[in-house]
Length: 179
Length: 178
Length: 91
Image 1 (cartoon, each protein chain N blue to C red):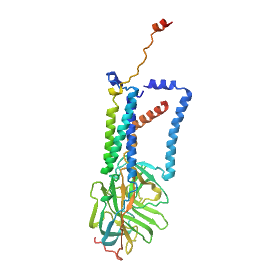
Image 2: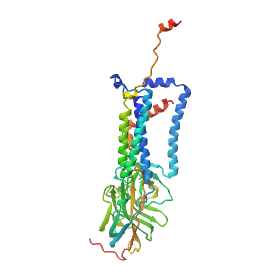
Image 3: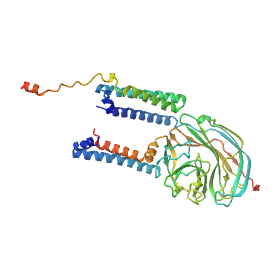
Image 4: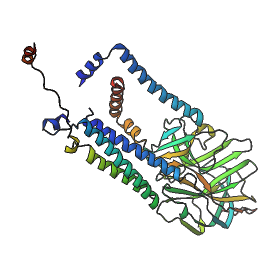
């Protein structure tokens, strides 16, 4: 004969396994959704300076200064298995010393229920655009991409690039830093 | 309670007792096999980690579970969440790649930052260390499950709970008869 | 638990009651799980699913854990212990 405690244990275990099963079904129901959408990016001001980077190796490195227009409506991406989007804008370019450089310039956490319609004009960026050397001056092909990391209630942490990138070039001369 | 347990053991015959011990060993070894098998499949030295700090909030809270892979062929890219170890610190850190530079010969160096931190991680690295490399990485977060790891956090913070649970489980498995 | 029994509050169900209690508990939890999934999917809010499931669990605990009279209708009828004097008479 089962005691009171073993009956309580059986009910709790069954409820937990039903909850686990529902979570898995929720994950399955959102597994094949296409999370791509369009974004428009444009650069307004692009200058490059040569400044000692005291954060890193104290040598004079190239520091880019850009302002951007950014427009993207990410509200359709949210569903019942998206807790939060981590949206980030990164620059990708090649230099003579490095075959690939990726620098995140701006990011934003959008939780579900917050305004996900991004519309920024002439925005200053959140992080410094330091190069690992002197590869920004006169660089003709720097690509800006908007991308997001989907953080679910339970499931895959996927990364999606927006449709629509923007390429720009830095000027051939340094802007003298006013100090 | 204790007397009852001793009497229970006395009532079992030898064959039955050995059977219980063996089935207990079976559970332990299959758990170990599962863990090691996951290590082989994912290539990561610890395929499942529990988030221990709030530095990635609101994405990950303390006690959330992350599934890692560490496929050497697949390169790390900016924006990905990596779990890395720093010399002199026992606990691996879960943070996002902020900057990444790949040399022509394929060596990669990168800098990380926690979503909830206002500065990058250079202050967390070993003294004088500016960048992380692939060797520091334990794995890259691919999957997420909330809350499950809270049990292990409580166990680590209150060791008595851990021993009590382990003792109860051990006694239960040894004495439980179909 | 023994404390409750000593107060005269019974904790045991009979065998038939246990069978029906377990069946009812599973039925309630599964039903609320399905309702929660459909409602959560319709509203696109997973927390609704979790809360509905939790509500189902609470209901199941209330209805099937305490030994309500409906689970005690078929108690086992043990035979009366035979006393020594009875056995002597048979001889």
